Length: 66
Picture 1 (tube, helix red, strand yellow):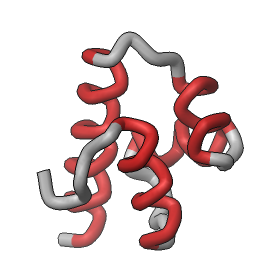
Picture 2 (spheres, rainbow, N blue to C red):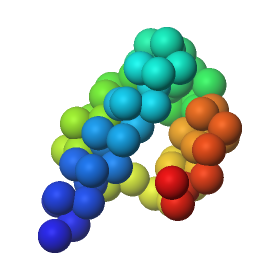
Picture 3 (cartoon, rainbow, N blue to C red):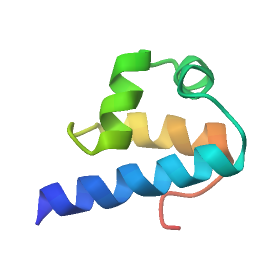
Picture 4 (cartoon, helix red, strand yellow):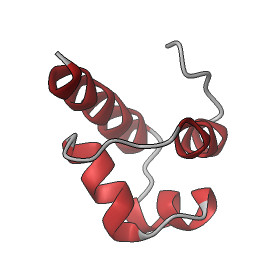
């Protein structure tokens, strides 16, 4: 079940990023994480700390419960 949740989160972040016309590199830089880490998050292949999720949410100006 957790893997499915990570994929859903990753897909949601991918969609938001595309709507905002941002590159992965832009999001990663603003969230202060590596490009590789952000790419893995979007693919749903890595678990992230809540702090990382909150940083990404701040970049997109969203809350984690969307």
